[in-house]
Image (cartoon, rainbow, N blue to C red):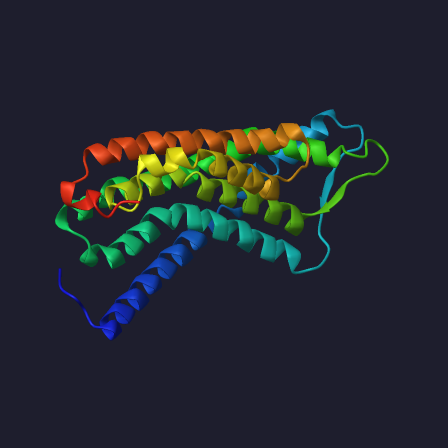
Length: 250
């Protein structure tokens, strides 16, 4: 491995960031052409609520710029999801020169795993969590109020929740990578499982759109399962880790 001067590192970082932003912009433009279909898909949890509610919820526009800004927001999220494998590649390409040859071989599984995990988390949130959360929140006051929701606020909350769950589902992939690089061990994860449970439940409480036990469980239990799966992946990674890496592991 050759040690590069600081300015060379900064220039490389700048170039990687530019390529990542360009990829995101291109994919955002692609997603923008399907903005209507994406908006229709994201409002399906609301449609499910309306199917059984006596007072139907309506998406409304509060100002003249809101339709465009909302369309751009959901397109940016779609673009990020589409460009994620390329963005992860740029991150990996930046750190790869500082890795050993056996570590650089992790590029393909890491990139594919990161993209798949993000998509899996978003799908889980869309099909499992939101169908419970949206009806609960909108029906909290029963028939006392008629829900009229800003389309920008609704889409923003849904997209944010999908993105957060996508990021959290990266836990096993990141754990596996850290284990292969020698920064994490299964012993560390297992010995700190009580702390992890407290942190995961707290995190679930912060991102869960509702405060009831059912929806909290729908977020916290999958996170605990992911933690357990991360331990298994780390154990697997330890078997294939070179001996010289073991000494520096946590």
